[in-house]
Image (cartoon, rainbow, N blue to C red; front, side):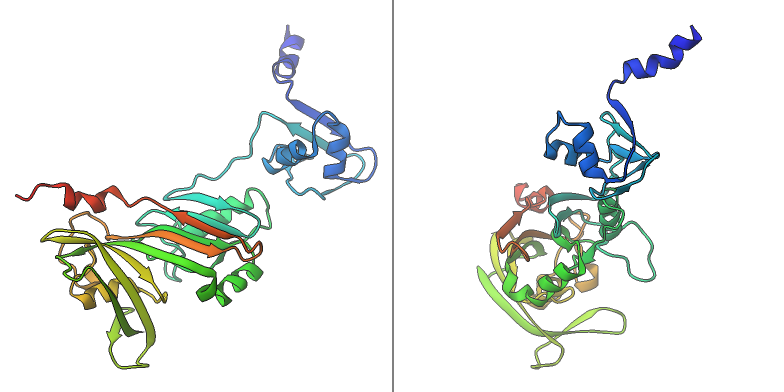
Length: 306
């Protein structure tokens, strides 16, 4: 009875295979030889999913060197624990970049004083679950309270490529902003020079070269006497640019106390990065990511006027 019990897990789980290494080899060719009924891609995905361990340690590198006496285990049931992503979803990932949709409230990257869960830290854990040497590099940022599409690089080389060619590579970077009041002009452009104060607040100046030049284009999508929904295109990407420019326009973004808003109609900042379209830094392909407008941004236009 005892003996039967001991063997029962094996009979229940035929999806575990163990092999002892007899001669030096690399992991992928070794697996291809042992699992000759599987194609190369199937074996690669078993590796990528963390289902192969050498002497009890999960290994995902194809070229991991094996030495005689080691035990290689393939567990086709077990999938490596993928870290839970909180406040973000991955829209696209390849060898060079990760494109995400970030929720409002999540920091892109921590400032030195903060040590909370950021998009950067979560994505670092995500890439390390597949490749222990994986890293993430910041290309641009979204303010904590802004939601929407943003991109990270997976190597310093790709980060540099993107940052050095940002103006040419990015073909469309558009936002949706819910602002206070009725914007009268159907479309317009705001141009000013932005600089940062000691309290980290951005200030707008009309004096040429007094700070960094910032240009924002807007179009009214919907409006009523209390609110306007704008489509906003960035020509330059300065810190807090849209937020400052909306204040300059006399229509601060809803929920943006820092830049003049008195309304908290949607209990969050009314700014969402809706579209990011760019030329892929290594393939040269044009990629476009569009996320839906948060429902709360549309609520002020649904209610019948009281």
